[in-house]
Image 1 (cartoon, protein in one colour):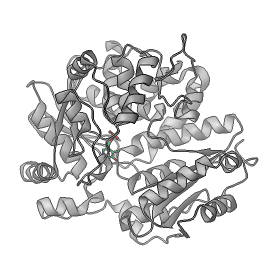
Image 2 (cartoon, rainbow, N blue to C red):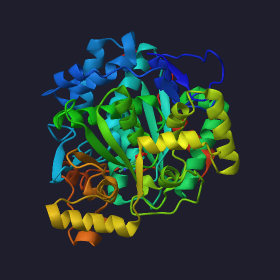
Image 3 (cartoon, rainbow, N blue to C red):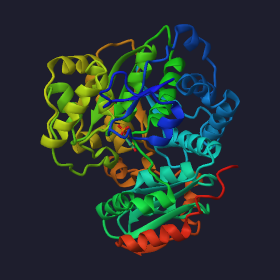
Length: 474
Ligand SMILES: *Cc1c(COP(=O)(O)O)cnc(C)c1O
């Protein structure tokens, strides 16, 4: 499989391998990488997956995107290892909420949120490819809570990776902090910064902008736009469809959406041949995607905090991958549209692209009040506790579904115990942390703390990162 950038205007465009795309993340022209074509998922292949484990389905689904560069035995071992630590035998179990309504629980990974499903595979893939090339990287990121721990869990104990995550001192929850500070691996460094999340992000940007520092440490990022994350997210859509009767029976999905990565993966699965009837986007009050699908205008507005912080996003970076398709895979057209969007905050109107997008997705805005109502109703009617992100998916599923007789699967993207206040407020019940995380509150922490000062942070990273020339070969 070869990949092209969504902003490459040359004919023919540059074509990259999976490994290059994995290590690069973002394309040098600012675009995102997409496969040249969609590997087909034939009805027979889908039928044959009945009874497969999650890891076996993953092997079948991701292999065509990788090609011969990672040999099948090594890939199989990486995938098996990635999902071995999940706490449910089905990895992504389905639970029925009502006639034709299901939730898929994507919170059985180490950090209790769905990003584990991609990052637990991408971390080992990254490490494997770096080791083959005898390279090492230093991953640097800032977190306002959840992505930091998912990145740390993906990179811990990897030979070719050191990871440094900056978080704002005193401004994340104790559980979020402990998920990072209690990881005892020598290659993991969670650093409290005396400042805000924006200060942490600015420090990360400044380190990347410091060319000698960037080169000396071979800096890399945990990018939400890395193609490999989308690829890993295809797997649970296929697994759910197979469990509910694909290829004979189509299935619909409702997806709580921020950066558009998760629901875009569903779209890719449909393009490959998975029988998906309806794809519903659920947003919170930061509803740029719902406004686009329902009204045709994509205009930036300020980000407002909500009960579902992981979806408090206005620029949905992965949307560019869909735009590339809607504009006939023209890198020049995407580059022009994105340039205009960055300048003016409005994506130029394209009636034909909008109509195509509307035929592919339904969308629904679910504000905080409707989110609380969704949590309360689900608790009352089924005895299930939903976190606020998952509650948006369930509300969107109910609001937009068109057909009866087609199972609708709402994605539960976080464990309710990650957002106990919102859940308790809506239901009167405080969700308990699963047993293996309850221990978190007793484990010793490492809490290095630094001032909001670039030199201090760079000195710390230089002192703690393993030298680039070492390791990486094993
Ligand atoms: C990241 C995240 C989302 C949004 O997913 P996107 O791929 O950015 O659309 C939804 N819910 C939770 C809990 C998340 O962490």
